Image (cartoon, rainbow, N blue to C red; front, side, top):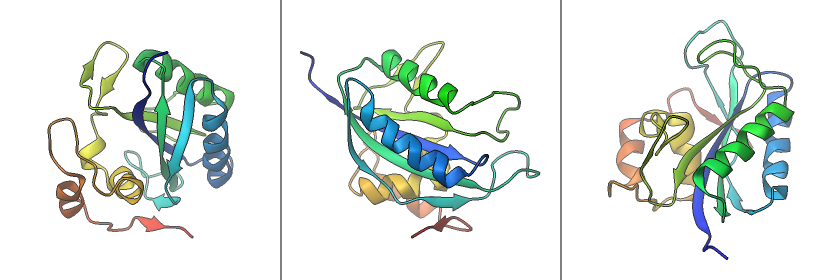
Length: 162
């Protein structure tokens, strides 16, 4: 059996009761074959990215150990999005559930379907802060530390929910 790889998944929703969407997705992640949910962050409320004429988002980050390959994991995440009636109509538009593969071990992956680390990872406070909550000493594949990016991207209007 392959050795488990530590991965981080970003979760977000701003439609159809976003808090419930994210909480349900966290439960469903731990039930997927080949995946162990190791930790999840608090929920965070964030302003919408892109078009501003949409509801605020609820975001979280999950830490997983998996034996799945990166593309097999992506397939599982997209199946879960689809089960939540995810429809891709508008770039950065509203969605019932968004699951992003942020990090897959220390691997750098660039292919047609997947880029890891996730391209916006180090620029988005709604990903960085929940990620730092569950992995405060995280080192990115390029050797940089998460704290460096937290200093560059303060909480601002991002709000940790209890």
